[in-house]
Length: 500
Image 1 (cartoon, helix red, strand yellow):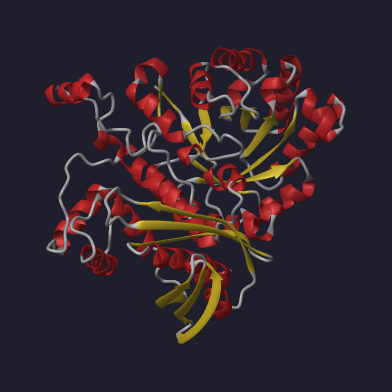
Image 2 (cartoon, rainbow, N blue to C red):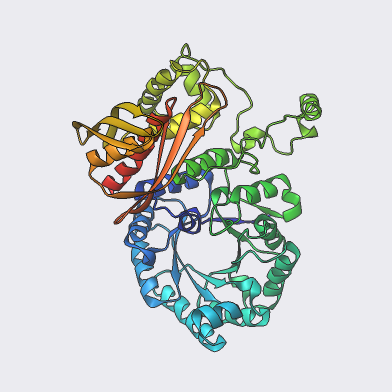
């Protein structure tokens, strides 16, 4: 079997669609998990887009080893120069440059003639080759291009030194049979195509990104690009976990193999969801909460007789446990550690002690700790090293709407208290925190959900706030008290702004 290279663009194509700014440490944490997962290439960002992205790519290039670190550029010398600078510390650097090749892109966006597009593409590849040996060229909106012109462009960029050719369905317009035919056409007609890696990059506007990517692989592509959980522009990108497991379950059909450690899929999905604040739908293939759940009596009967009656993937293969240990306030550290390891969390002793103390506080409020509670707890303890810590909240209400909140926090080692009024308890708490922290922000979105279904369930709050310098950041907080959960989420977001 030939090798299929996995190109992850969660930190670039995925992040740019979220309307948020992940900080360097958050991106670094995701990148390190992607290495555990076994991806071959991490597209760390678009250095020319912002100083923050430049810093993130630099840090990932310097800190993350064992994979190719890639940066995106437009077909402009300035972009390429910045990208090369950002990738200077990378063990295996790749510059990803390209230009639109469809009539829509050339005429309406670029306002260039086809001849000018070819010249610009060739010049970009040649300039990138001055810095790195590994240059990937993307032919943006390739599917809607004139395919004979696409072949001409690819001929020229391969001659100029491109090592990877990315043939995207940028707007998610293709069907699987059409996309597969385009990849076959390129492989059969582009000169020296055997010198390069052919890559597929599909968007999900019509819900066919995974199917299109698989069709491209079947047609001969040997690199697939996508994101964890399928996050990305508009309706998202190809969902890498879906492609990986489709190939895993039917390796003979595709004739390729990957270097992926499938048992890290579930943990990677959860980490990306927690850090980005984008929830995974319960019915999401491979990583959704219901992906391995059997509710129908007929299904339950079949699975109990033989798992293969209704399961084509063993849950353990993607890191989802099969056994459940009921956890309560009487459970010890060993039981907690065992269950967390089954859920995909590997903890050092010091971190385990921190999580265990948080677990005991939660267990005192709930009769039984469910898996959903543990996932939320792990996300909450991961942000408790914040420079701003909530100490106490007191809320009084007047009538049906007005409220006054008194909030005490510890900030940079100093304890301080202030009060404010608001249109309801949560608004009053946020106003009091603003007074204490002293940052001017705009609340763009506030979401509160129940982590599990019982009356004593944890409340998980997510806030999205905008700051004039930092941009948009996400904050998360959990508690059995929804006002406390909301306060924790708001403080978590403000702490990120203070850190940047």
